[in-house]
Length: 127
Image (cartoon, rainbow, N blue to C red; front, side):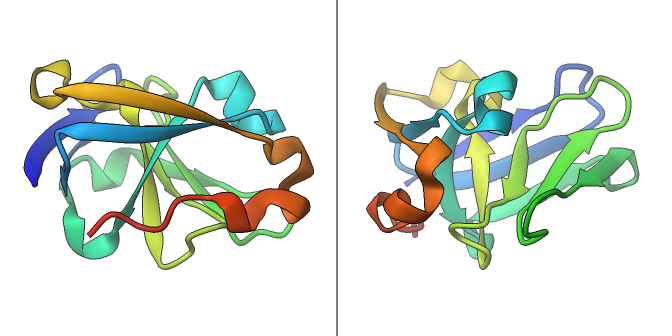
């Protein structure tokens, strides 16, 4: 396990996670992920720590309301959120992790446009 640090564009929100240096990310084509350019790395809440910026985070929900999309109020970047597929964990945007601790990155496409038919194909949480 490696400690990865990351955050939003303006630096108001900062976090760290424990995950492999060899990251296996999921690229979803659903309406919000495609527009945000979000690359998913699912982690347990135990492997996530918000270092800074709780007061700078706003929440957006839609559809079922299960997913909690957190974004920086200042720059608008969504660096992590509670996904519908893993409501007990978090999805970290790999694009928001500092590159220095990523040894390799493998990206797997996911058909989120047809979420109900494909949700069982998503990776489990990283512990």
